[in-house]
Amino acid sequence: MSALASSLHLFPNSPISPKKSTFSTRIASSSSTSYPINSFMFLTRKCDLYNNTCSNASLSFIAPLEAILFDIDGTLCDSDPLHYYAFRDMLQEIGFDDGSPIDEEFFINNISGKHNEELCSVLLPDWEFEKAMKFMVDKEALFRRLAAEQLEPISGLNNVCKWVEDLGLKRAAVTNAPRSNAELLISMLELQDFFEVVVLAEECARAKPFPDPYLKALDALKVSPNHTFVFEDSVSGIKAANGAGMPAVGMATRNPEQMLLDAGASLVIKDYNDPKLWENLQEMVQQKLPL
Image 1: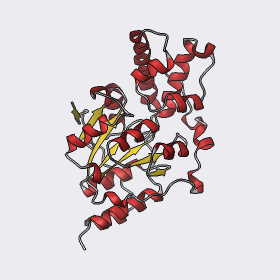
Image 2 (image 1 turned 90 degrees about the horizontal axis):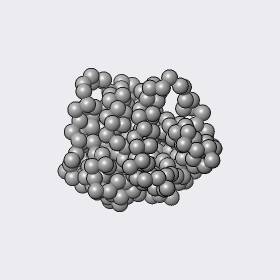
Image 3 (image 1 turned 30 degrees about the horizontal axis):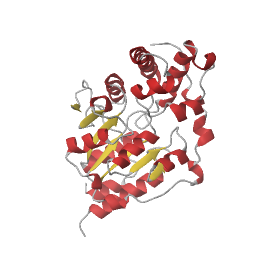
Image 4 (image 1 turned 45 degrees about the horizontal axis):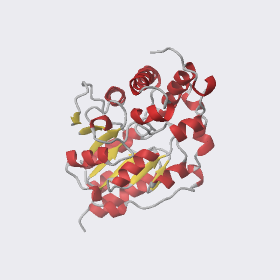
């Protein structure tokens, strides 16, 4: 199938064929309680994508496309509600804010997209660093228990991954999450063999919002930032992508659309089935083809 013909299959019916293997992707150097993901209210309260109020900038300037980089949490899978519930329950247990549970707005503005070392100073500034990091480790363990029971991919993920594979584009996952989280989520999504590289911010000099993780991914894939773009769902991730010289497509599954635009997203979509995304992908492929 030609590249153009492939690009015209905007919503392929067949998902990626599951590849049953251990987590072998190259790394670049439970509780039974039910937590209702769909009741995470800021999804409907904050996002206004259905009214076409978001930016619809073209990504054609990066053609020919060489690679796509993906954040993991909130970008490949709808994991933000699970992080929210884990933080809410554990912070309430230690008497944070006099024992009042954090709300979703607090989570968006103060927690989402930040790495654990930064969150130690944001949430637990009076604690010794080692104690605060132990709290974060325990929170991540709770998150993994919840994710093992309830994790869902972002709608249309299989379609965009198949499109990437059909065109032979290079791809990497780039995350602020700890290794154990990244391995679990990629394995549960059956993307072990999809990503050529996984970059962990904890193995970089600086985490997002600094560009270091994305720069490391570009170097590992041997691609140019001028022909690569990033899928991101957080302010820190969008700033990191822009800082590495790449445009970012904001995934407004949970975070407010305007927040992502203000951070520098070139385009904001509601999920991987968004027509605006596929219009841009098709345009880039058409520009790559010879006349």
